[in-house]
Length: 405
Image 1: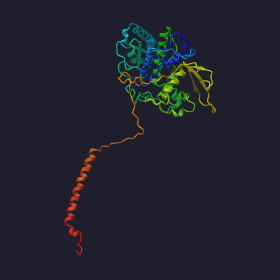
Image 2 (image 1 turned 90 degrees about the horizontal axis):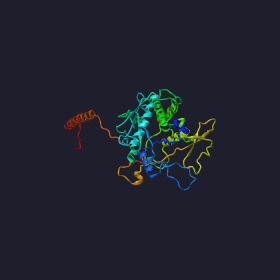
Image 3 (image 1 turned 180 degrees about the vertical axis):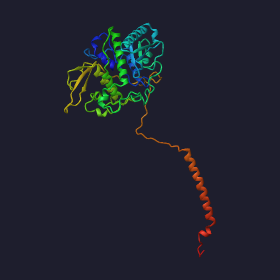
Image 4 (image 1 turned 30 degrees about the horizontal axis):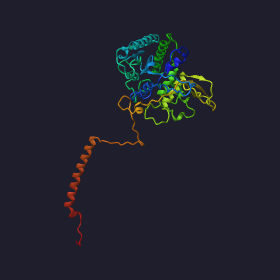
């Protein structure tokens, strides 16, 4: 998002090339999002199916795999050490001269731009790709040029990746104690600083790759700090609240948004998906002078979306602004369920659910307690046996016989 914001400021210089920013969903479950995107590209339905019903319809051009000039994947980059990040390439596809030339050109530009920013860009040639969405594109077309940018060379820097401890606190990048929410919102953690530095290098590299000219624009550190706060600390931040009109409390809490991916129930976008869509739209969109009631696309415009963002409440009233953007959603549903193809080519994760939640606990006692119980039982048995035997022999003295007997 930082890269998108930086390049959106110089969009007038980028009219010769289309730069598309994509956020994939469900990648932890066998790359659901990227595999579906590739499937839609192959069918000629990405970013949306072409509407041929009217010649007046304004819509996006269809993007196919062969249209990709360079695929740049920003993977794990929060734990950059000593200003060093790594560019991974696929050794098989690099055998193609065109792929090799495009990748090497970008890596050369990235290395130069990294040096200007007091960072180091390490180009890894001939090594295997790390787990990445880019692999789904290569499975369908090995001639797609691309790089995967990470903070690690062979092993993850993030040893808690996708676990309970994959958080700011777990990565020793938490907010200072006793810092207010207002201060924390603009506080740049070490991860936010790393993200801003890498985004600056990537944005400048992409700009020079496309235009051949240098870019002085830096990624916005305040934006990085705000996004880090909203996504990893408290979702009820002012940025996310601006997306809702009085309904924010239903979705935003004093905790991060849930990233859990489950079976679609047809109840709209996942909260974190909606927040990401609105955030990207706000960062790269264009403000237009329209009221909330009029903030919507014309009937013939299938390309642009119009989103209304709300300002904080002042004197009981809440104003806002309308943004025109080319940001949209496509469904991240595995093609396996569209084709009834469960051969393993596409992800086929399922989810088990229960109407109610219950738990049963089975306890195992301490072995010492077992010994104490056994010893007590033996002692009690001996004592009671002796007592009963003694009472039986002295029954005549203890129980007096009746005179009528």
